[in-house]
Length: 66
Image (tube, rainbow, N blue to C red):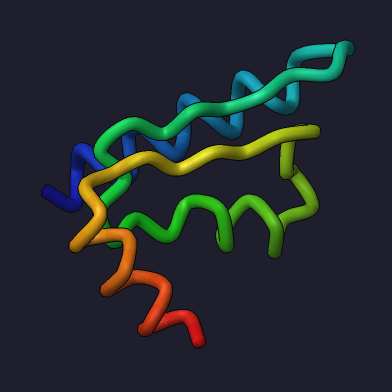
């Protein structure tokens, strides 16, 4: 699990660091992923960032964030 999360984050970071246009990321099946917060902390957020998951998972994540 750690290797997958780390690998995906490295790919996202490399992509965002090497583009010169506005882009968006759609994270399907986001679960409890914290990539948004990592990108925000590193000042790498794209112009739009969407997370999509089942309503129960999204509710749980929103509760944790609040």
